[in-house]
Length: 119
Figure 1 (cartoon, rainbow, N blue to C red):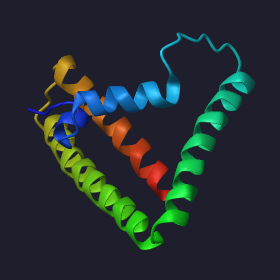
Figure 2: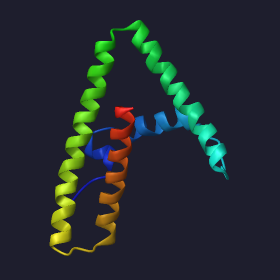
Figure 3: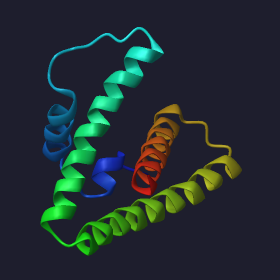
């Protein structure tokens, strides 16, 4: 059995929701083109970059890098454990969609976090 990504990593839903609202807002958007999506995501990543640069200037860069490595380590270990379990599920020919959906969602979120931290 597995839990959703954020619960597995002991991050409360309130923190996830607050960060989502901080970066994406509460207004529902409909993006219909890749150009619009790129521009929108570029503005959000720009905000994150500004916060990180500000943190680097106000604190030692060592602390930020250490935090990023910790995130990378925890998420990568979680990804590896889940990958091993997914292999076992395939070997046992388990086709339960609800279980497989959670594993797929966790894999996608893990890969996105790993990619983001590496950037």
